Image (tube, rainbow, N blue to C red; front, side, top):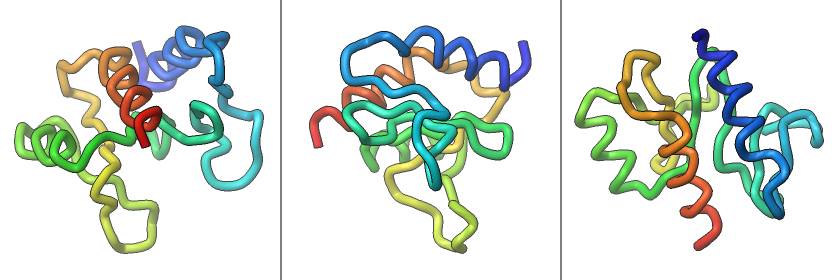
Length: 106
């Protein structure tokens, strides 16, 4: 399954839950994102799943070789955003659930 198809599967899985807005419902930055009560928790950027997670969790996943800190083309990697490597064995849905829980706490 391609990364695009995997993301479409995530969108299908999360759309319909209370407070979730699917990609395409907004304009500008994050228009390709899944949002919870207006806050981005997962998006598909440059062929990668990008997730908002606690800094410590991002550190752990980066150290394990599962991804890199997301850089929104501004030259500075973001501490709480992970761009998941396509080869990572982590299930996308589980990581998206973690991201959803994290943005719900903020």
